[in-house]
Length: 275
Length: 286
Image 1 (cartoon, chains in turn green, red):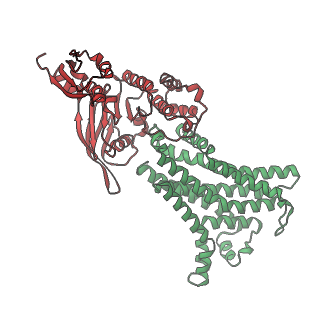
Image 2: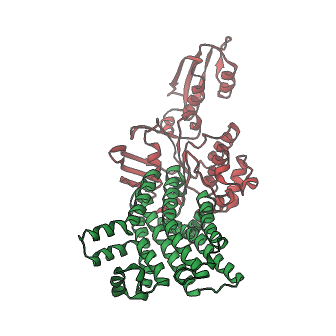
Image 3: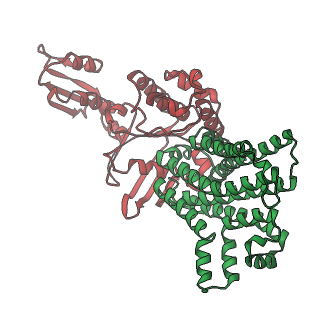
């Protein structure tokens, strides 16, 4: 446990001194600040006003930025450390491989999750000071969604870092995965469905394998529980999970996906060359 | 103590180590030499359990990959290139000390003996230190613990002459209780420390010279050196070896102790341009 905590702490300190972390923090802190500055809490969309309007916009923006940010920075820093000889030295110290690998994940997870959560918490505190009503249930659910999203893409990033031998390869693979997930949000699935090659149920099931789609749908479900804006696809989702069931699925599935990817990464890491 | 048995390592199709068989006993001090690409660093990484490989590597009967904590707890390692760590020096010392279960102050003390102002750099990022300071700190971390095996990859490359001398003095203090593997391009530099020379070439051991064993066969070696021209620096370097010179100071003769032959040749290697002829002859009847 001591080795695990030491490694996590090491990764936190290393990350906090890295430029990517400063930009990452600035981006999410900046988003919240800009949303307040531009008076988003005063605007109304689909009946949403105040802080819930701001949180909906924030989660949509986060879903666009966080996955690629987490993927690229995770694979870049880990593959870069390996290439630069950081692993050669630190892994010559008597630290167990499981403590090293999971310690890095814990440290990195805290570093990735903290800025997005603190930015949202900052919005809530700012809203409280301004006397805006706080949608606590939405805040709690979005916190869970962000935690799940961070874990999902961190796990995938760790797996890519283990598999790719160079920083360039790791970055390329991370970008490709993000692009594929993005394309399967709508474009490819819609195209396939329009051509009538697959059943809508299969298309929707495929879409729900995609964690990006799950997050997007879950974020919509917070203000549209019956998912009316999705059209016919909503019937499949609601029939399969139910409204609250889907919200639970959106928290659990991506987290399990990330943990599964990280576990696979660990198995490959401990069996192959560490450098 | 350390055993390599049929050790082979390939990267894709490139074979880097080809069936290495070596036994290194407690107290042996090995100079691992060889040109670039000979396989020295790969051998060291296999010893540290950082590479998957064919064949066996054992330290006190333990596999460094399966018993990482136990095996690496007994190994002090200094890499050839300092890692670009962003953490402050103080944290690196505390992190290493905590993992190696040693007192950070021991690392501080060794660092100070090497001429490092440890207290003044505790909050500085490791990556921001000069090359020499990084090397001194890594040496301090490796020596500031009860390591029974010291593995050093070009450890003195970035050290100034004074720090280099102190470093070798520090190693000399550990001669009796540690096994050392020192990878170096400069045999002369480590010759005074080692009692075994292993030369590698294209992934194979091409020379395994146990200096101490050979030295035990004879007590002294008759030495004769003829110079092309005289240089005062040569006379100064050779001064401690008690050789006699002729009036023109071009011919030097005497005898040296057998166990010191490697160190002696290391000293001479700096003056190869001056030497036109030399011989070392074993004196069996002395």
